[in-house]
Image: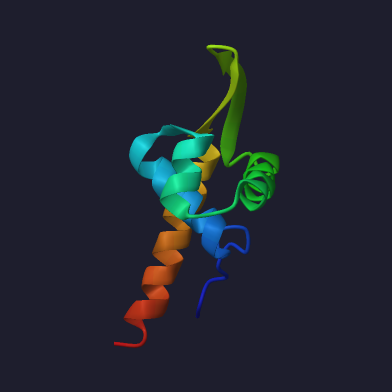
Length: 96
C-alpha cells in the first residue's frame, strides 16, 4: 500500500528549502532566496511554516548593522525528509 506523503514537504518551495538545507546544514535567507528563485515574501511564509513544524530553526541577528537570518535544519526536519524520500521512492518503484 502507498504511504501518505508529508503534505508540508509536498509543496515545491518547502521541499526545495529542506533539500537545500540537507546539503548545507545552514544557510542565510538571501542564499536560499537566490537558490530557490522565491520572492522574499513567499520564502518568509514558507520558512515560518517549516519552523512551526520544527523542521528548521531560524536565527536572526545583525551583521554590519544589517539584519541577517540564518536557517538550519533540525533532526526532526532531517527525519521528515528521509521519510518523505523513502515514501516517494516506494511510489516510483511500484510504477516501474
